[in-house]
Image (cartoon, rainbow, N blue to C red; front, side, top):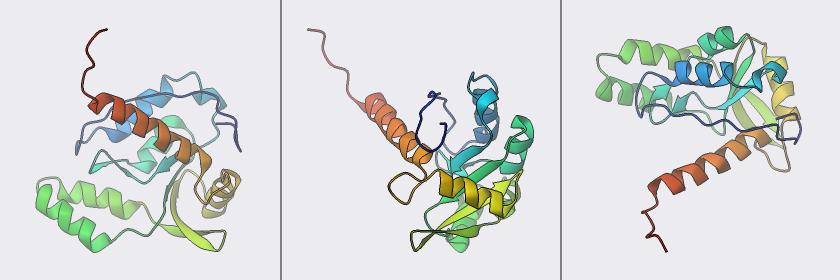
Length: 166
């Protein structure tokens, strides 16, 4: 998007549920996109996609040579996340927990409420400015609101039963 509200294009990609390919898939998708050249930063909704397929914000920022800012609506329950990672991914616990811990969160005040952000490739103030500039009418960044709508629509179509030909 060109902030605050011009949609330049939409790219779709797929990652493995609970896999290890989120960073590589996001990097490949964006590097092969005609829109990367005009992007000054990458904004993501949290670091967990498709369950516990975790983004490495630092690696993504380096691969794309752009700041990457992750945002979430509330501070995560780190004790529960750690427990889940230890239970469901015992062989990969250290690596996955390291990605969670590497995403140091800081609050961003929006309309009297806080969002939580993490950034790689830029400082906290630059990340705050990006988030505030990207707000639409609500308290959620417009690019992420739009991405959520597109993702929901694609997921709904993918799960829909086949319709008989008429």
